[in-house]
Image (tube, rainbow, N blue to C red):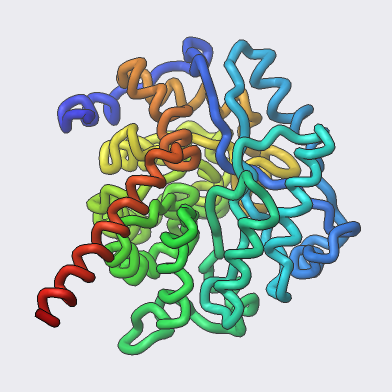
Length: 374
C-alpha cells in the first residue's frame, strides 16, 4: 500500500507530457456502444440524442487500434450499459445485443455490465434475464443521478426513503446482486454519497465501483475564473468515507465533467491532477481503475457535453502516466489493468468462496435451530 509520504510527493511533482511513458498494458473497463435507430430498447436514449450510432468498428478505429499502435498491450474491454429504457426487458435486450456482436466476431468483450432498475417490481426477473442474456455479464449499473429520476418514476432511490434514507425497494434489489455474484457500478451525485455509504456498508459482499472520480459537481465551469472550493471540500469528505470501505473501488475517468476543457489549460489540468492523486492516495492503486469512458468522441467522452475538447485515448494514458510518475511500476500496473481485472474478472474461486461463506452461515443457522429444538 502506498505510504502517506510517497503520496504527498506524487501530489507535489509533475512531468512534461513529452517525457511521459505509456503503461505496458491496459484494460478499458468503461465504454459504450449504441445504435438508437435500430435498437428498440434505446427509446430513452433516442429521446435525448435522436438517431445516433457508435459501433464496434468505430470503437476499434478510435480507441483500440491507436492504443495498440502506441505499443500498449491491449487486454480488452468491459462494455458499460448505455441507458436503455425502463420497459420490461430493455436491460436484458441491450445485453443480448452486445452478446450478438461478440458472437458475430465484431466485438471482443471481456465482460458486460447490464442495466436494471433495482427498485422495480420486476427487478428479480430482470437480474435473472440479464444473466441469461450473456455469459459475459459481470455486473449491473443503474445511474442514480437526479436528472435521470424520470427513468424510475421520479423517485430518489438513495434519499427518498424514511428520514431521507434508501428506498426499501431499491435496497431489496441491491441485496440480490450478491445472490447473482454481480458487481455494482455506482454513479450518483456527491451529496447522495452519504446515503449510498450506509447502503454499501450493509453489504460488504457486493463489490462496488464508483464511476468517474465520484462525479463531483462541476468544480470549475467553463466561464468560471476559479475553482469552487466548497464543491471540492464536499467531494473530498464523501470520498474519504467511501474509501474506508474495502470493497469499494473508483474509476478515474470523465475528468472533463469535473473541470471542463482541462486538457487545454495548465491551471485546470493542475486541479484535475490534484483530485486524481488525492483519490489514489485515499483508495490506493489497488482500488483505482483508469479508463476512457469512451463513446462518440474525445470531448463527449471526457465531459459528457460540458466541454468542447478532451484527450484522445493515447493522450489520456500519457497524461495520467505523467501524473503517476512517482508511483512504482507495480502500482501503475494496478492502476491500468490489475485493479480492473480484480474487480470485474473475479475467478470462480473468488465467487465460490462467497457461496461457501453463505453456506457456512446457513449451516450455523441450522445448528442453532437444532440446538434450540434440543
